Image 1 (cartoon, rainbow, N blue to C red):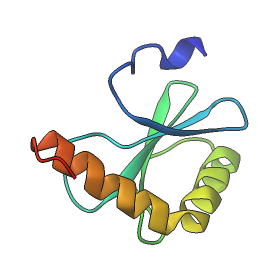
Image 2: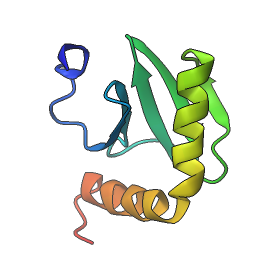
Image 3: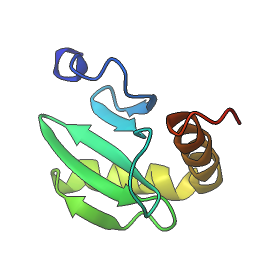
Image 4: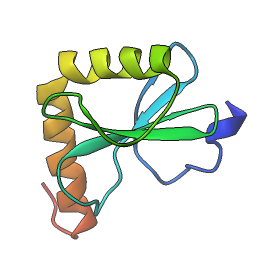
Length: 92
């Protein structure tokens, strides 16, 4: 996946359909959210409900990512907490 090679230190959570990359950054701002990248574009989706926080990607890919976020809400919130603690230097 050449378009994601610039993200080596960002924890990759999932790759959907081979080209929709979902990540959570450490030391990131609230509300808890995931970064969804597709074809050089990015959208931030709130983990709580899958709503768009910022940015845009094509609608079919956004809908697929929102479906994933809503179906995996609890796991994503747990990963958010762990990664934010790691970013602050606190083991969890």
